[in-house]
Length: 238
Length: 238
DNA sequence: CGGTGGTTTGATCAAAATCAAGTGAGGTGG
DNA sequence: CCACCTCACTTGATTTTGATCAAACCACCG
Image 1 (cartoon, chains in turn red, orange, blue, cyan):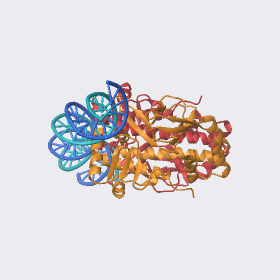
Image 2 (spheres, rainbow over the protein chains, first blue to last red; image 1 turned 90 degrees about the vertical axis):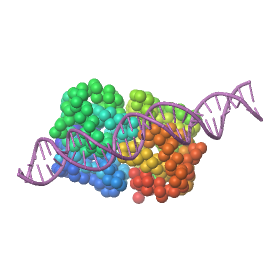
Image 3 (cartoon, rainbow over the protein chains, first blue to last red; image 1 turned 60 degrees about the horizontal axis):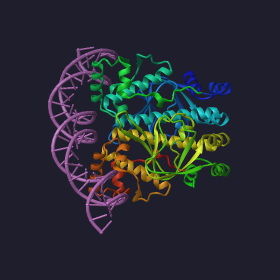
């Protein structure tokens, strides 16, 4: 059940059959994790990486006065702590948002794969670079966009990324986050996020109830959030 | 004159003498670039990477209504567009802040180095991961910190990074940015940045005049900006 | 049936944006 | 050498956005 992950790598990077078979045979320890549980914490020195197979997780940091900032949201096929392969100490937390099934792959396994198969090294490196591209876009989101723009942008990003792994249609997708979680992702307060959601709902642009997002007017959301999917670098390898 | 770069790689990653000599002998085209000039632009498909040898540069995006958000600041020894090796299309601009001397290295050169020397591949990969760690911290900065905290944090980040390449003492460093540039880095308006700087100056915490930052009270700045250098991952290789 | 966590609403407040008008230093040309 | 121009910085008045504080409300669950 690491197909989402392998499929993603193959779409963006050149992998031959041996590469794919090496990935398919690498040892993975699968674990079920409850919602709102820490996978790794700031300060930890992990010896393995975590592949999300089902459910949602997020990376976050917490300021001294207890405010949380979510840094990215992760879905099936993502390895959110791949950077721990080269950066020994975690500089942020990785936490589940929903119940998750996750596969753990030891650093040794990954390191020997990257040493023996440069294509895999490149593919994994590329994944971390797309992560970074998403971080950049999030800096713009919290730095320069209004509350409703941030919300629109987040929704469109998640729709695009979920579509790739078959978890979103054009019109709706599941999003197991509370309004409080969304506030932490957008750098806002939960109260204000609620007002934004109410307004978007009133205008028929967006519904968000019981953990499902329904898009009333995707065009409007793209325009409002100034969403351009270039930064997701989803183009298939030439 | 790519010593800053090689020294940085060696501090953080395991490189043997052959690796270092390969880096020293790779072909680099040096160019002088004026201030406020674009090196690469969003939408470009570069075939080379840019090594900053002297001066300051920044990555940025501009929103539809013309607001700029600076995503990172780059100094001697940085390769700000290393990601272009794997992400074909630039999703942001790379611009000089001051006059710069920059070295250009073709993708082919880098690719053949990484294929022949896995240590170099790892070292470069790690560099892009540190970049990403800085992006994460910036998300927290613009998402959750007040204007004066953001300013304090930026100043401390730059001091730490500049110290590594010998361009900062504990007390002062050159920073060729206008208050407008700083506003674009902090997600604020120039007017408000000015008020913050005035306040910090009045309290004797910070001076910033004619492109030099003088720290009146570094302790206070660290505390105010909640600065913890963990995210810079400057620890030397074990 | 009462508890609990998430959502909704209202009233007030604070931080930063906006608008507008100086100031001041360095650089250029007469 | 001085007048003037420009760009960056500074200051003040006002407005806006989103934060804060506080209190319901509501659905689900044990």
